[in-house]
Image (cartoon, rainbow, N blue to C red; front, side, top):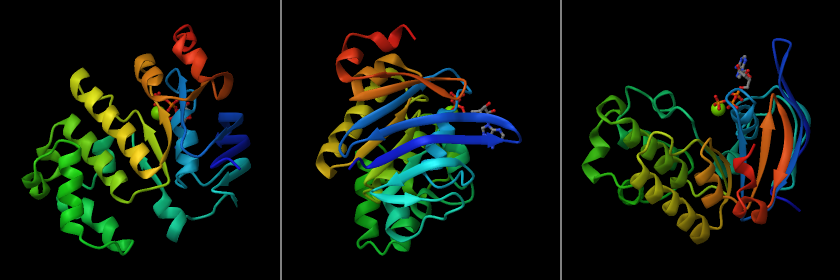
Length: 234
Ligand SMILES: Nc1ncnc2c1ncn2[C@@H]1O[C@H](COP(=O)(O)OP(=O)(O)OP(=O)(O)O)[C@@H](O)[C@H]1O
Ligand SMILES: [Mg+2]
């Protein structure tokens, strides 16, 4: 059974269709990516899977568990699906230090050694341990993006939803973070669903990908097609 199974997913916003008849399955351990122009519905699909966009139609299953519209994620499901948001500034609480932002989810999910876990996570994404006392506005855009990645990884999710996770980083840091994501994926047997505008990022990261236009999946690429660069023509 695939880890994620989406069949004929449809999402409407005030009568406008953002996602139409989207179907794909993601196998455990894979990185599956969504590509396509701005506004084609990529983030909307991730938000549905994260349990944030609760109005949708179609069929959806995560970890073999069928989901229904309106459902709130709780317990294991909530911990096992984490998302790195496209806009890290909006996803970090402005009045909370990084320590609070990073340690609170650990406490909620009853994980031990929060201090050690937070310091380790900061180090992994290349931030100094003393950054824990800072607030989001005291960080650069790239640093905020790294905090968002650290927060998602701290809970050791089964499924990580990555929405343009490195778009605010320069090339060398981007490569470092992508390699870190790949290493942690192997170490912790995670599965990734990635959104990126960057054809190089897609080719570097993905086992398979889907190209979307105006809410509809137009084409699928397997690893061989990605290596051949076929996704670059779309
Ligand atoms: N909460 C919302 N209310 C109304 N319309 C929305 C909402 N969220 C998204 N949309 C619309 O749905 C469509 C798809 O948006 P989505 O954010 O999924 O695009 P995207 O592919 O992630 O684009 P980008 O690459 O710019 O991030 C767009 O037309 C957008 O304006
Ligand atoms: Mg988006």
